[in-house]
Length: 325
Image (cartoon, rainbow, N blue to C red; front, side, top):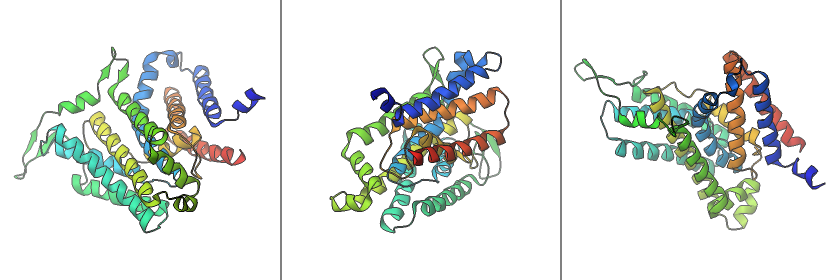
């Protein structure tokens, strides 16, 4: 009976989904490519940016909210970081904090509209998604910001790529682990500490479980919601910095539909969209599940349309499975 009960837990169900992906990868191994470590290393690198967004999305979804703006905030952070580093020539020690504060501020703005103006999170973050994408295009002039810099007189010059770009996109441990993956794991650790070890985490779960009961119990609901969306904005800014470093430029069109992957990772992990339940550990399992799904499709040359359709179908199945439980 105890074993039977364990298999019905969210962690067990999330692990079963991950195990299923690994089994599928072993069956459709693309002539043994799936069994090479480099494939798994590259999968972790490719999914890390999405995983950073999923960390923030986990916090917001536990409050019974949603954040559709994370992909646009990522693009805005990538453009801002590239603009500060190359055309303006700022050192990384100043550019990184400015971008992080910028992302956190926009996330806080979304949280304030949700908490104080009582506007639905879907509407607020949809509006922020459009606003942030537009602002990214304004800053970049509608084009990629690269190390080919145009001066006020119209002349173009080539500047050296910032060293921080190479550092973030480098590998350690003999080339077996990417720095961006380490940054993702740090984001997971920070989220785990917030949700599991801080009073703020208890407030987040309380608000998601029953906002009115939390308010009557003395929980600062408004401040909690604002902080949750601020964390989502912060992680989106971190992801944008990593995205700019990996692409070696700031693209206002980057990150399109990344919010879909982030939501899928959170839901597949077992965090309920109704709020009040879930954890970043479950999200980590969901990140690996989606990562392996995408890698298997890539190894077998599946078209992009197939990946998108499967991701959407998986989200629906995961939500229906949660409702059934």
